Image (cartoon, rainbow, N blue to C red; front, side):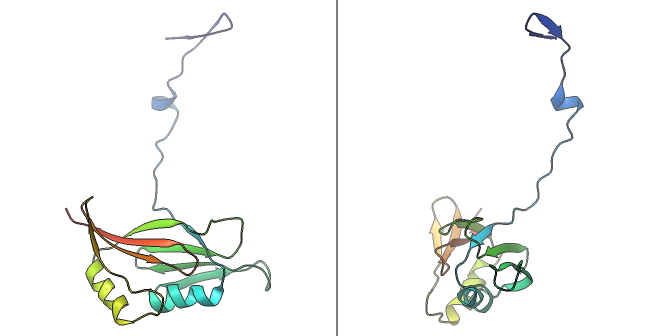
Length: 143
């Protein structure tokens, strides 16, 4: 099949089959906006038990950009105002959600006492809001 453009016959190209290699996606890495390094460390490191993988600043007085992780979950936390919006929400799959909830509840963290909720969409969730209004939804599918 050929294409007609301005009265001229053009050869057809099947780009989907011949010329494009299928793209493979990896796990996304969300960037969450933070405003206060001390509060971010208290919440993500002390309370949630993530660890710092790396930290970066363009200069000592510039905003902090850091990667934190726990198991396979990787998050980027950034103080710069232009690269993420406060109030974001992310969903984090969790294999042993009940045990993690017990660990967090036992800490008696002053700003969060997470509970578990069975949702009608066949998953159990534990929702937490960080000090910067970002919502973290840890979940386990019930099927």
